[in-house]
Image 1 (tube, rainbow, N blue to C red):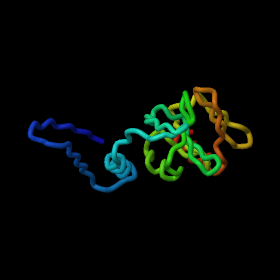
Image 2: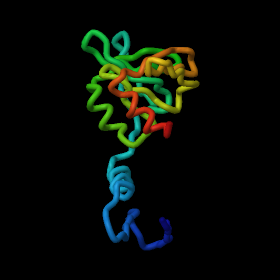
Image 3: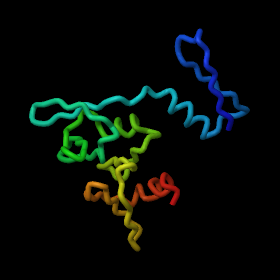
Length: 146
């Protein structure tokens, strides 16, 4: 794939054009990523306070007692979005769904422990642990190229 950037002082906003003979999965993913608005901040709530969260700070999103939480190095904050909304919002980023109740940030993983039974334990850099449910094992292996 060739990539070309042309500087034009008369351009008021960036414009991206893709020339291709067919729409492949790779081309579609590029178009989808470019079409999505840039993810800026998320709003997290804790003790009647509102916090602005940078997605790079988040280890994972998980559901508990019908609420969705974002776990960071410092805190666990409640977020308003549903897991499926967060999964869609972070599609094509380092966030991957690993169970019906959890989305993890791959860049915050220290290592993975594979068991003989086929399950995967995720060990985060902050020493927290999460398990990949059997339903999502193939998805995470594909994402990691295992």
